[in-house]
Length: 124
Image (cartoon, rainbow, N blue to C red; front, side, top):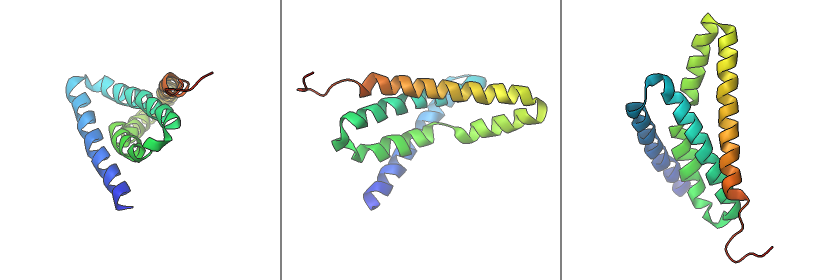
């Protein structure tokens, strides 16, 4: 139990630092799209890998719940959506739809890149 908590905490610290790096390196209006899109893509990759290599599940909490949970920015997405809702409901709907579609497509693409490959030594 303590090991799992530590994995999430350490992963979260790394994810927060990575997100801060994105903030420093990108224009403000693109930061959220980059963090959420990249985070979704990498989440798909990791989930694909963890289906192929379940023996590495100890890393799953560190990489997905901790690191990517802190790297992606759902709270900022929600705040931006609420701000748009106050000025333009249609723009808020478009914004939320586009962000959601982007993240689902990228997560699916990342998953497909890694999950469908065979393990070394498998035939078929």
